[in-house]
Length: 143
Image (cartoon, rainbow, N blue to C red; front, side):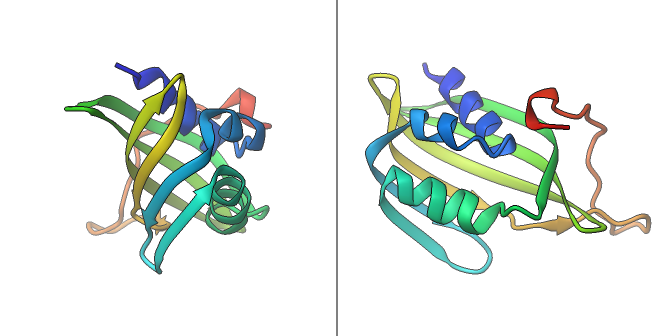
């Protein structure tokens, strides 16, 4: 159906690309998300992008090193997107996963639900240390 739009959304989040995110989202949007710390709601795309995604979730000190994995598919009348990001904040490397369900109308997203794993530290060892598959840096993300 519209997996391409989901992949574009994941790349825009990974690239912290405000313009691309705003181009993908309808100006009036039904947005809800859940992160480990709190729920989020918004009805305007500018609030979603500036106030939530780039304003709280991925700030200026968070460097997205790689878009590690992207999976898209249809779920009945909705689209599904799952992606993982490798993010560095200071000296600490994290893995972040987000699961997204969304609708597409005329090439834009008017309805979006997202659940985030939060920033999970990628440790240097131990059996319980989370790991991520190796990934190439994203040339379009300023690396």
